[in-house]
Length: 318
Image (spheres, rainbow, N blue to C red):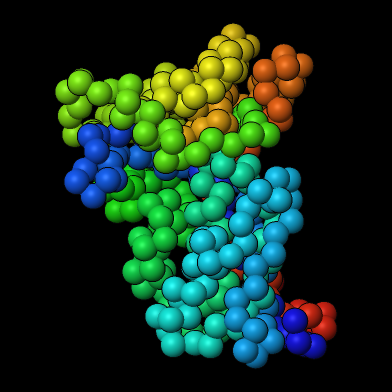
């Protein structure tokens, strides 16, 4: 990083799928889905800094499990910076440092959160001035969850999940997440889902009206029983221990329990912070999972939280 390089730090949230309805496999290999996304206050941060001229895109990471993440051209952070630079015709000389807090390969869209954060950070660093809607022209190319990571809140996703409509929701929701040190591959989970459903007639996915009614009322007791994930059976088939995790959380009084996305993270909706602490303690002591996190939602999407120079002169904090 050059002396007195400009830096921009962007924070982007994890997500949980309150509903993930998966339709039959399409001709292009993807699945039509209906997903009710919900952003929670577990965040990754991406720090974008001026790079050495001619050095290109340099990606580094810190956090649990980052040693298994490739940092080259296949990384979503690298691809996001490259896509934005080429779109805006900007020299691709940037240092990108990712502070991982979202579980890796945990079904909580950590890679998508990092890609969205990179787009916002590089847009600010390079002074391009793209709005969220214009950035959406790039998010769909990077992955179905990236568009939601850009916006946050609670939203209904259709298509592959990239077509978003804001959901009507009230209240704050408390969550306990049971995490695993070993991730699950999203493509393998979808393939297992196809295998398990082979020969069964699978209709087009539909949003759950009961779930949406509970969200509109802001009543977690109504939302909990309606949590649903069509990938859950496949995730449990690949990782049978997840069934015991779900049974444990429900036995201790969670309002609802679900495998988050493609797993292996399990999400439990609870009444309030007090119950969250009780269930988190119970899960920790049960030996059924490797870690436990408490979070709330909904929260905002990718957002600049700091900008300045590496010389320490702060220009902006939000």
